[in-house]
Picture 1 (cartoon, rainbow, N blue to C red):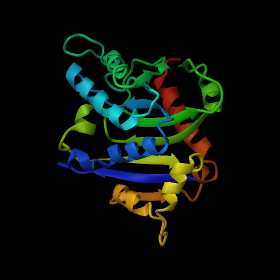
Picture 2: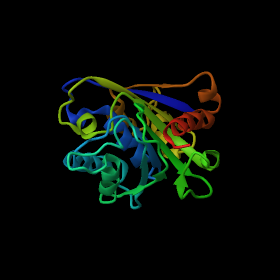
Picture 3: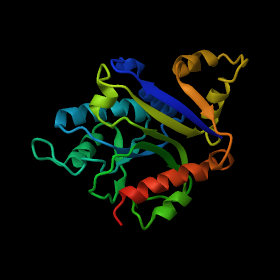
Length: 242
């Protein structure tokens, strides 16, 4: 079953109330940090200091498990640009990631502008993948389970995710498959009306002021994995070098 959560952010909002951060932390912790991540970043941070802060703070959300979380960035709008000291922005992200409990997914990316802002969470069900290329895309999709996809207006940078007070209003959509992870399914089921499960209090704090719905029609309802994999496929076809 596909679930959809609407995650608004208001101008001036405190970082501790940032719904996109909180739901990503909830998702990764409830799935035991088993998911790898492919990121379409929009605009990345541009200085060594802001890159370091962004990756460090992101690791507190996505990479607290005993094993390193695998993550790969597409180019976005400025991954191929350089910092003020002449370092390539996306390479500087990967250098920092190796410090903060991330492991790089090797992506053969286009060095072109792409303003998509997405995070795709997936795990291998069979086989392994040394690197991800457009030629091996179908092989990849055949051996993974896509747990969730975040689609939004938030650039993956320090300013957007971790600035103490939000500089502007934005919103993100988090879509996730509750059928393949027992803990996610259990946590969602306790949200149903009249459910007396004691875990409701924990979830009530998280989902307060978040609109959450489930699909009722179309491929997202009938075949959630195909629906999510098609989104990931479109993302990678747009962002990988042919």
